[in-house]
Amino acid sequence: MSDNKNTALEAPAVNSLQADNVQLGGDLWANTQSFGLALRMANALAASTIIPKEYQGNPSNTLIALEMASRMGTSPMQVMQNLHVINNRPSWSSQYIIGVINASRKYKHELKFNLAGKGDSLSCFAWTTDQAGEKIDGPTITMEMAKKEGWLSRNGSKWQTMPEVMIRYRAAAFFGRLYCSDMIMGIYDRDEVIELAEDEYSFVPAQEHAEAVIAKNANAEVIDAGEVVQADPPANANGFNVDEATGEVLPWDAVQEDAPDPPEDKAGQQTLDGYKPGF
Image 1 (cartoon, rainbow, N blue to C red):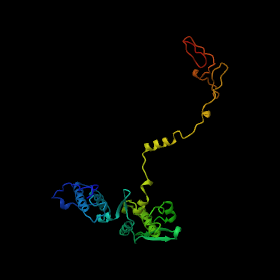
Image 2 (cartoon, one colour):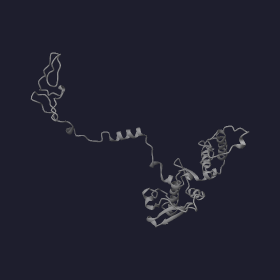
Image 3 (cartoon, rainbow, N blue to C red):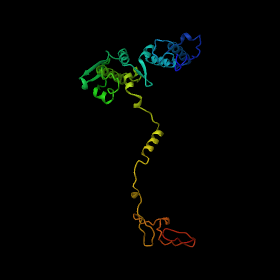
């Protein structure tokens, strides 16, 4: 067993008098008895060598598969065989999505595919009929969409070698997420997750984003010093600076060097009008 895999998880003790009444229902976290039973099952399954490698010797991953199987009403082995971890994201195989929809008995017949066009004009949508006899059409997938989304441009992409198969798989995945999200639990198709590479998405905290914007824009604009420095405002007849727009006399620290000293009152106070009566 490699070092990066978990060792067996210790399950809570189950009262022997109640052990026969414990059942693994849809909620593994309902009580310590159901959780303890799930841990025992996870440890037993993780010791197997015929389950996928993501679960071998890893009871924590196996416990998640058990929880999903309980919620979906299917077997843990079926979940483990069809749930893949790509770029640290769980994903279903396309065949599983089609199979779980067909086996659900939610619709009158299995999924069918409307394939039209050839080459770059190829398009497809999945459809079926509900129990009331109404036709249910899924979203249409086109080769133009596949090109714009970058599905064809990836190295080793099967879209380049078997587009008619891949376009059916993608149509089924879109149908499943739109109409059967409860069956596939909102999890993406395996090929979709592969095409959504890690370098195409990232989470940037707000503070980090703000700092990045400031750093990017800092000193980015070249300022002409000649535009910033303005001419001195005109002086009035007494030599005091005056705001050209409002006619307001400016503070004394803005008076021109050659302006006469302002008069002072007996208390030595100054005003913009020249003097202020003493008290």
